[in-house]
Length: 595
Image (cartoon, rainbow, N blue to C red; front, side, top):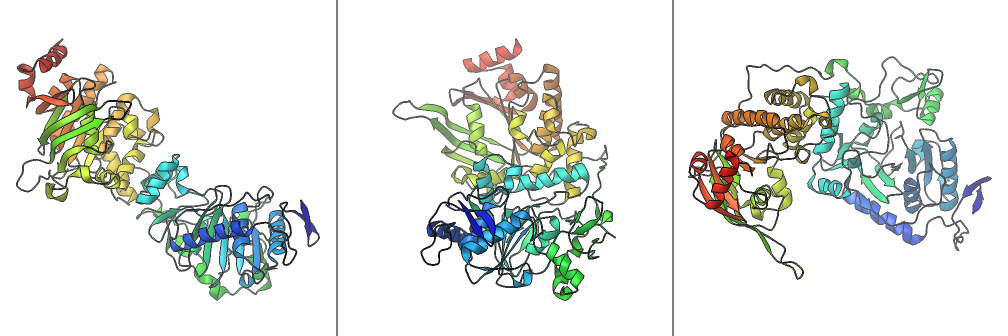
């Protein structure tokens, strides 16, 4: 239905007029309550994405239904509403939205930020300060900030719950490695209240500092996804950045607005090549000489102006004669092991329609620092299940797994919650998978993959991360000229080398190798084995090598256990098992390796 408000036709839904005052009902009271509840939840948990229930708004494309729903839900006749679109109060969308809001709420309207109680905006935060008690409503084009780096909705939720934002840091690392500047454009990710990651509505980086410790309430809403998050007044909002790389705003030194002469506002380029203030009303007030510069001055983000002298160094240098020194292995007090597995068991199935499958039963072994233990068996013997139970990919296991560096070797890791098990893999426990795609992100660079491990472990210096990545890649014989190449372009052997470098990045205490050469050509596999042998000799790691190939076990390990049908059938020194196997099953494996 088309309704005329202030002489202009606007679209309104086919709902009856409000019985009290005859104004059109664009949102029913139930929908308003849902939005208000979400806003209150967002205020209570700053930066947290809150879902809400509401109908689709029948408005024109580009009007920003999320912002409209919030304004209609929280506004009233006593409010004075300012609507801006790309910094302009007189754009087509801004004019129609303002008339719809005013006609629905019976509120006042204004173009002056100082007079507004609610400012609904897209792309901009007003140049002038919004005082205490005011509300800024931003229309959000993407409700989930992690979707740029993570496509799985479940993984996005998990990462928010665990404050695991390493992927976003890696995204920033990749941009810096590619361009040398923090060129994230609009919607630069920020951390709210030192807890939740948020990507502001596509406001320029110039406006991001205005969200920090602001006097006003900021509400960000996505109408299609029905998600809201909020930044209450006086809340810490910090842009994501590395410790040694400054965050920069869009500032062009020496450029002034062609209309008002301002050189300290966010400006856009015109078709003629001139620049003008993006905030049109601010520009008019500057020309009229009525801007309170003393109030506005603290909002000018001068400390974030670009400084070429602080730009990142793109080149790295690695001294071939200098190798990173790995820390000494840690054992449990009074023991000689770094890793101990005690009576580990895992059973699958056991329902009405399937019988139980015993994948592992009473598996026990320990590994000392500097020692490599082999776990050998055919496919289906349970060796990979044991490995997955140790690293936490398989849950509901019986028995115990201890690491000397964790809880003085007395904490049974099998009883830990999955988030804690995952945290161990940042710097205590590392894995090299048979398929490099399981241990690497094939869509980012070799350096970015190593940065992923370092950032997860708490590293926040871009230059230190880059230097460490270069040293590790050089050590595994990946050319530094390919450091910034996407790993998906690498051969299988090169991917495996990058995965090994990533696994060793944080100097773990325990390293698990799952069929590290399976699927590689014979010559490539031999090179990877030689590399692993050298790397293990340099470090006091407790290493577990899982393989069905006795030649791999023989090349890398000191001791070995032989598994069959979920049980250990023989244990001994690797060379003795190979030279004089006792169990018939072991004899078959050795015969196959010798043939």
